[in-house]
Length: 110
Image (cartoon, rainbow, N blue to C red; front, top):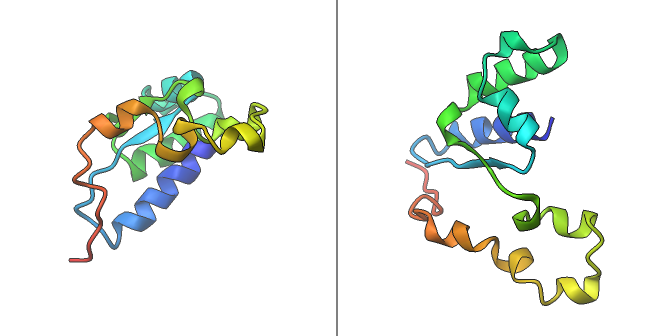
């Protein structure tokens, strides 16, 4: 469901920023496996969501983000506010994120 929400959000954004380069990440290897395979292989609930993800995004943009490097997981995994203040991944993202092509970060209306 999170991957589908992300795909819907990206589709909406791309209506206004059609040339923006997109990277989609999930920390769920199961969800990534579903997305990267034929939707017909899955039961109806998953099949319908994967089919919509395929309609809204290219499969090539999807990749895995290990849970330990996922900033969104910091609070759900029990990181206290005291430790969160000094957490580099929370404030700046995982180190590999900085190494990617960031020319797509600035979005301009055309």
